[in-house]
Image 1 (cartoon, one colour):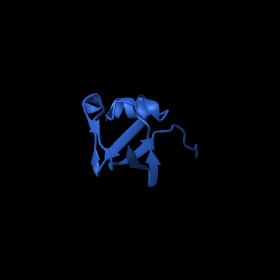
Image 2 (cartoon, helix red, strand yellow):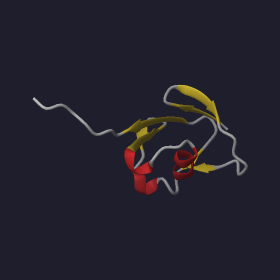
Image 3 (cartoon, helix red, strand yellow):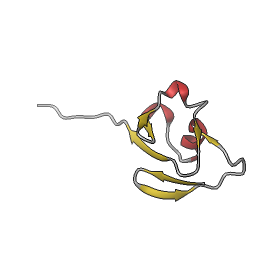
Image 4 (cartoon, helix red, strand yellow):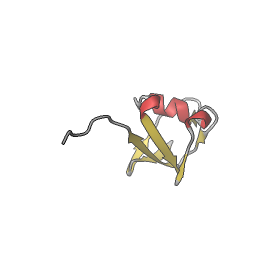
Length: 72
């Protein structure tokens, strides 16, 4: 399966020929509670990850939330 993830073309090997968003994020090593995901231009609610199918040619942007900041 060929996907575009954060601007990079990637080939993902999958024996089922189907990935759900939740499984793909785990496969890619992301911690689900720390990311926001856009699929083909639409932000996907984390509650919907378990039923959102990823298809060949999809475009994903995965943004990791990080803590921190500066003190003035």
